[in-house]
Image (cartoon, rainbow over all chains, first blue to last red; front, side):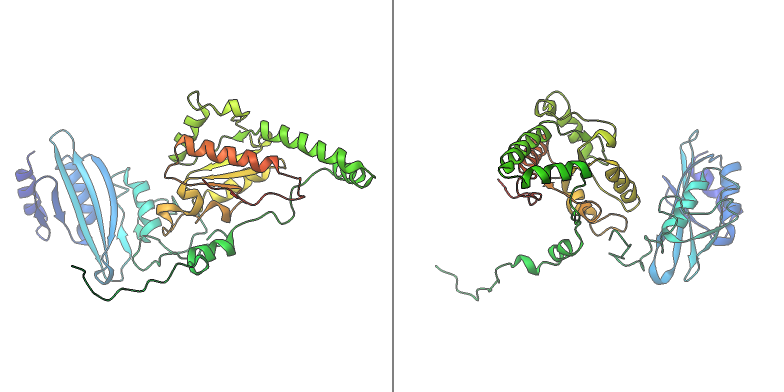
Length: 150
Length: 212
């Protein structure tokens, strides 16, 4: 499957999304289409490899969740983005579709405080359990004290 | 032709006015209760020392014991980050600390020295403290590299302890990012000098009294 074929398929199926570029194919979908698009990308476009999932904090514009999925056979790679909207920190989970999203979403929860709804085991993965706050948010102050060591 | 312009008056730096140094003074760890010895050893040495003419015996014994201590400093192998690579190079045959009597040992219970080589994260700090507490007295600590000295490039990160001296007392600070094996060897030799003066004055030597 070439990027052009993938682009037409996405435009047919998900009219509310925008597609740019070719390598990787950048797809911006609304939050409601986040899980259906992942299902579509896995089954129809053949992107079986879940590369990564992360988030971007755009301050007043809210959080943006970014995931990359690859079709290694056809050299097709998809960068899927969605905006959660200002003040929203809930996002549907991709774990039922991609098993590899499990720890990525836990890390994303750890760093950005995004609650992935439908995740089987959402707790901190990198920071200690008694950590307060989510350090990669822009609102997390530099040099936040963490007694007794700093 | 000389250019005439306003010459900015830059005040000479006063070390006390640096925020980081104030933080260091406020937060670095020391050994308030000194080193623990067995009661029998303390009473024996006190008795001999207070006996008329006994100070000759204790000072000679101190010198002998310090010579023995500094000639067999066993560092516990405790590598945290990229500095550990340089530490391993120092332990290996090219730089060979074994000629200084240092045997890298994989157990804190047999070790005298902890070389903190690398970034100490907040999550790692309790484990580091526990390993340090498991070492028998008298014990020393060398802080190796910028990260262990002050947090280094990660000083203002959210996850790094700003210097390992906030967790354990440190005797020698080795600068560098990472310090080459020569720097670490220099630090270890400084440490041996400190150990040679360990109890002669009744307390430990101040950290890094001599710089090159």
